[in-house]
Image (cartoon, rainbow, N blue to C red):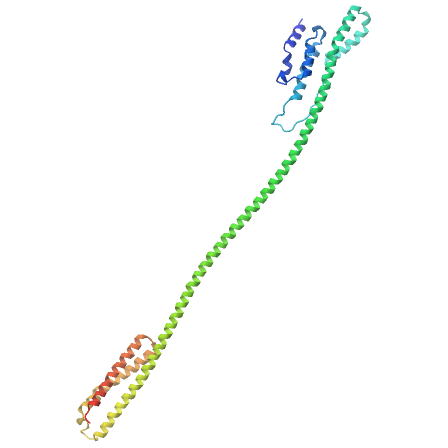
Length: 335
């Protein structure tokens, strides 16, 4: 009762087996040819279970053949589909054996109907053989494609490994380069520091050289001053000797004059009151001036500075004033 309705539903919904492929337009010509042959067959001449198996199997095989590679999966495996014999085919074989045993009891008309039914089912079996052969060819092609993909995958893995090795080598080279750059920067900073120290040393050397030249100039100036002072001292000593000789000569002249002009008598000093005044008053002062001049000369020899030289010159002038006074008295004395 329900079997004709089931066959009708399958015929009306012939695209229901494409749930794996996703689109009826992707069916192969073999699929369409077999399906059309099954659809146009008489309902009483087709095994409904076999028809259902064929309809469900063809889209599955087609989807396996024509499926697109998914980019999220880089590895693929091969799949071999072996169809399991259905229970209806096994029961049909048993029925065929029983039919052969009971063939003699079937009327001639019924035998003729069975022969016609077998003749109608021959295209179905030939279509199944074609489908199986096509599936085998497509599976072989798929295996070849899978092998090619595996080879390409291995090649890409080798390339990735070599790229990884190259990347590691480049990283090592970059690390060495950075280390060399750090060493170069350290050496540059060290060279700059040494240059700064050298510049400071040059400046200090120039300062010391200038100080040395200044010291040498001061020493030369001091030497010249010392020579000048020595010459002044020698000159003063010569003048002092001359003054002493002059003083001694004046003293001797005074004594000789006294001895020649006057006798040793009680009236000696009364006859030359001015000379007595000079001898008694000026001679001690002259002696003090002489001693002061000698002390100033000794101080100038010891200190050898301008102050001591000025003091010696002042003492000399003071002594010269006494000598000039004594000479004036001597020249004014009446003969």
